[in-house]
Image (cartoon, rainbow, N blue to C red):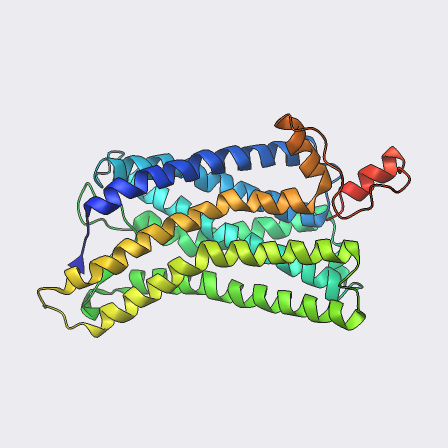
Length: 328
């Protein structure tokens, strides 16, 4: 037994939310990529990670207008079955890619703080780029099954359907569920571990009151907050739907009605996962002074002082300032 919902609430609420996510995300990540490519030099291995995070967010935003049109048209997909599966795969791949690179950013901070002499701290840009390419290949392989996803009819374009009969759950669905769980809860555990280790290490060294260390703590806390706020509600709702659906005997008349509230919450929290692409640029803004100054210049806000440093100190040379601003 399968449940499909086309509630008026989803149709009326999702399009404006997705449109806002698209406008803010496309602008902020487009600006971020412009700064990374043309103005942020020289790059370091950590810059490669942040660039790929921005790229994943930007590509995700490029699909949102089609999803907005789908819900605005009362869940009537007008772009063909093939492009439906392509769009679903791109959404899943770039959302997973965003999680993966956000986790790598946390790991990078962990290695720098807790293991300052580790070889990874001197990783070249070329090796970092190769590592990023491998991560993209992994995320593609984890979501490639969506390219062959069968749809209920020619107007549906969904990768999430509630099943209340385990007989309907095939290998493809089990793989999809496993990917969703693995691609969130494992990175969550890694990010929590990195954060706790960084705090513990800095407290042991009694460095938490230093200005530069406060900036590092602020950076890692932003990663945690963005990750938890954007992804945790949707993943918890998804687990509740699977658990609740598994407890209901198939064939009951009110099964789909009982699950409708959870389904609505799921789609509302799904918009939060798209909001991640809008919040990620805040990480670049507050962690890279050069990035902050370029953003303010592009928005005609004037040059910002390097937060975390005493502005009364003697000005550094241009070469030293550039080197300092590009450190992550």
